[in-house]
Image (cartoon, rainbow, N blue to C red; front, side):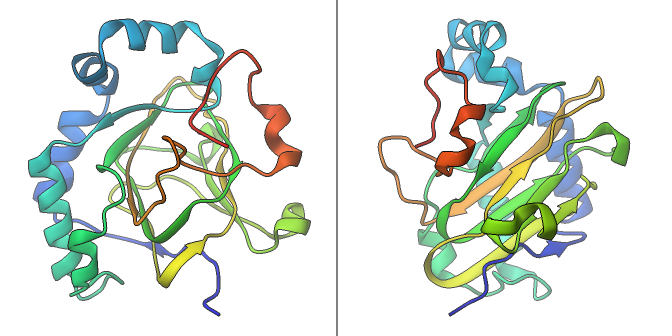
Length: 216
């Protein structure tokens, strides 16, 4: 059985593409989301408890998605190199996750055969929070947590042989007056009525009771 893990990689995309993604999406997610989903949805998000436990999101343009896929496919230093399955296995459109100050994400798992989390912020300090944390052992997570601080053009890529319930992970609270911006891609993610993750029962108390969220 393949070990459940998240593996950190540096210099994932070309300088040209990562710069373009940073300039287009960072600091602009809410505006783009309003165009894609409607200003009413964005206004609801900003006024509700949802902003504290899920990120603001917007789908990447088709051009950006295809260029990212092409670079992942052609980079021999990455685990998706020459993986043709990737080209037909994107579970949902790639998206930007933008955690506002105070934002966090509860511990959860995703059922995928591959995933990508790519940090877009050019500057990030450890004391600003927002670390990507994953757990080797879900039953003793406080003893085994592994945290990655956001770093420009770096992130986590993992590929399994088949669909797998991956390692439990979370995003720590953003404690600085800054937005944490990432590219997210899930390959083969099971679409269960819009559900994007599975939160263990012991963490469901972290979710606001008056907000419907895209989690089980």
